[in-house]
Length: 246
Ligand SMILES: Nc1ncnc2c1ncn2[C@@H]1O[C@H](COP(=O)(O)OP(=O)(O)OP(=O)(O)O)[C@@H](O)[C@H]1O
Image (cartoon, rainbow, N blue to C red):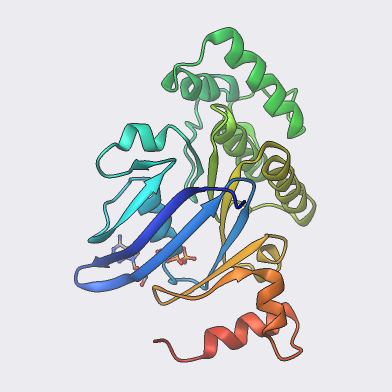
């Protein structure tokens, strides 16, 4: 029996000043699945994530998270989401601990439980000694890691990440990817990983290739590769993106 969908988006349309950014995008996500949302600059990835996180409403289409319609029941739908945005969600003049407690307070977590989860989350990211550091004093890479810790504190069923590895060195990027993958598979968390980096998308279970606001491919990486004519992953992605749109 297949796992039920945690997230379903149907026929999403969004335009800015009459110029379409998303043109009928469909998307599903199951528990334990890591989906790479891959597309070049301007493909519509951030727009899609902004709709999925309720920041903006679609012009057309529906989004259901854990059985809750995002437009009709936003707080219920959003309670199951963890999000790492491209732009920082941290107050850089506060300490790491103050930032993280702010988030756990928002989610109504008791302080004892919150402090334990914060300690565990920071330790898992190799930042166990940084709780009292002011965010401004952290490197860009460590700030990204704190963003991930923050997004996971309320133990979301779905994690949405928008260009999460921007500013990270190769080792830290790999570490972040490994962490997210293991959370995904061990905890059954569903992950939507938006990136423009082809080599990052390759480690996901499934690929959603977005270009000029339309989905060019949605399926497993294995299916994507078996449909290719002997190309490597990168060459196949580039070839798909060069094809004229629908
Ligand atoms: N606030 C906005 N106002 C007007 N146009 C916008 C706005 N946000 C995005 N767009 C346009 O919508 C299209 C999709 O942009 P979006 O940022 O969603 O793509 P992206 O795939 O996330 O790109 P990137 O990788 O560069 O962040 C682009 O043509 C962009 O110029």
